[in-house]
Image (tube, rainbow, N blue to C red; front, side):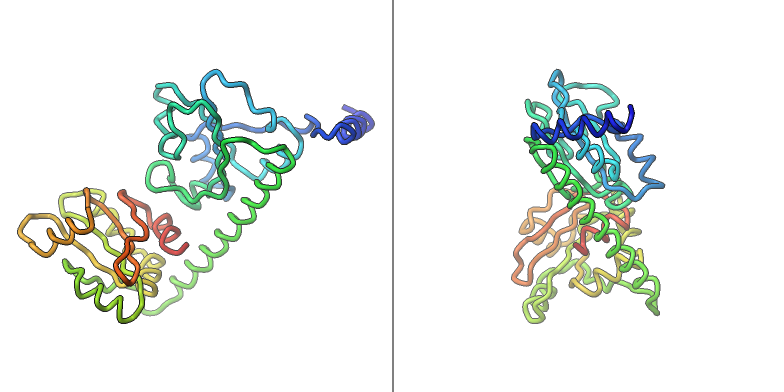
Length: 282
């Protein structure tokens, strides 16, 4: 297409208030492809859940959106179907299988909030179930990209600070008791982190390795009063009582409590160290 033809299309589109369909098409990927790309690219992730049989959203054909998505790893997931490649990612990200409308989400990458679909609630940068006009959508995506870049910069600075500390950061766990830590939290006006695990639980053992990471240890030690509850057996009345009071449903579980004991956040699954650090720091 000649330059004159492109300019003519742009002027015509501007005259009628539309965005022209020129420029490179969006490179849609599967989630597996996105995860592989994220190992080398620090781009945010764009997930578009599209119900089976629904027409393609034309906003993705417009120049402003295409240009904005050049800074994303774009994934399109067709919902309301059962197949091995689908793997239930829609409901893990909050897009129900029975949805009849499209859902679009911008997230941190698999490198930033790694394996978000598998391990933890992803850090949402933007979500919509009704795509706005192309220029507004492009602006939202650019804003999400700026937020993502700022998060990455904070994470890199945080990790550098943790690795530079001497001695190596460590967590001073209070074992199998919540009463004393909560009393201390009220005095010091600090939040409490509760980690519930068991010797026989693989996810719990892997989370122990994540907590040993210098960055995670620095965040927990600087921010929280840390409590570890071991439910490997039923012979601990205090642990059993607190598991009932905190409504613990299984292992591994991580809770954060305000200084007055109010539950603020919860995760019920394994998280790699970088995911855990990002979740606890943000």
